[in-house]
Image: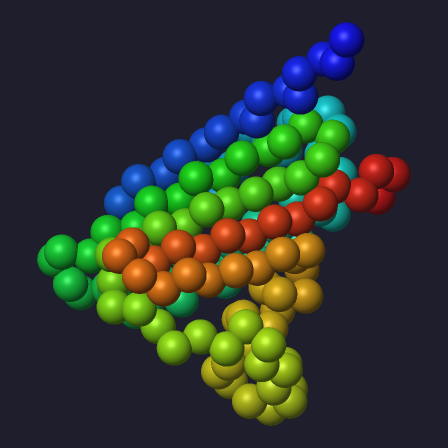
Length: 141
């Protein structure tokens, strides 16, 4: 008999539409800091990538009264951290494979940094736009 895979722990943050909401998102992740089996390095890298991506989304949609973004973070015990971001903003022209700009350049670093911190980064433009961020847990780190 096979035992069922454990259900993920889930955190949902609605109305991520302004820079102050990024701080609210980070506070919502606080319970993950005390979960056994989540290496601190994995959580830090995952959170860094998540903040970079949601920061771009918020910056794009900020000021529009109709803009909305929802973040769902899931912890699959012993396996991975995953975030799904959905927003109703204008689809962006995103190059997920853009290299990291040189150190003197002020813009364009967020996506390459996020990509380097994650095992998977996908963007599906549409209605809604959908981002998927995945960081596999490295045991012993």
